[in-house]
Structures are given as structure tokens and as C-alpha cells.
Image (cartoon, rainbow, N blue to C red; front, side):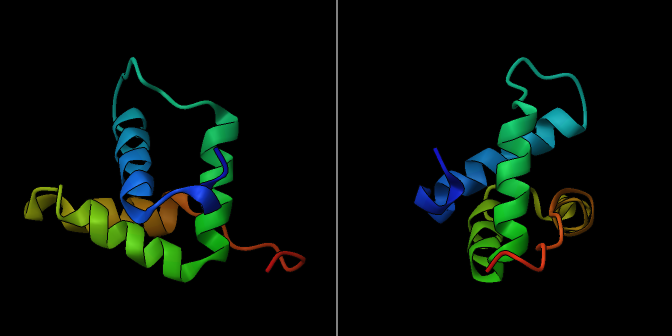
Length: 85
């Protein structure tokens, strides 16, 4: 499903899944296409990224917030290409 059709909570679930896969072995690793679609979408839609972070952060241990937010903003999200809205 395209990320634009997901709620912030559903995006947060995907982020949690991707974060787990990025930081260790996971039986639930996403495909490269899933990762790229979400990273591109969040890079182009700041409001969706903020809403997803708000939903995801309540599920995280507060001690993990800085590390997870860094991963989301620096390691995961791709800058929006100039030709995309």
C-alpha cells in the first residue's frame, strides 16, 4: 500500500518494523521497495513525518527517542527530489 494511504499510526508501525530491521536481525524485514517508498514519502511530506513520529514516539522508551529520531531524520528519510511535491 502506498504510504499516502496509511494513517500516522500505520506509518509508525512501519517505522518501528524498519527500525528493528536496521538495528539487528529481523524475520520481518521490509523489502527495499517498501523502505524506499516510505523514505521518499516522508522526505516529501514533513507533516506526515511529524505525525508519524508523534505516533511512534509514544511507543518508544523515552531513553530511545534521540537515537530513533536521529535514525528517522538522518539515516532513513531521503530528501525530497525537486520534481516531487
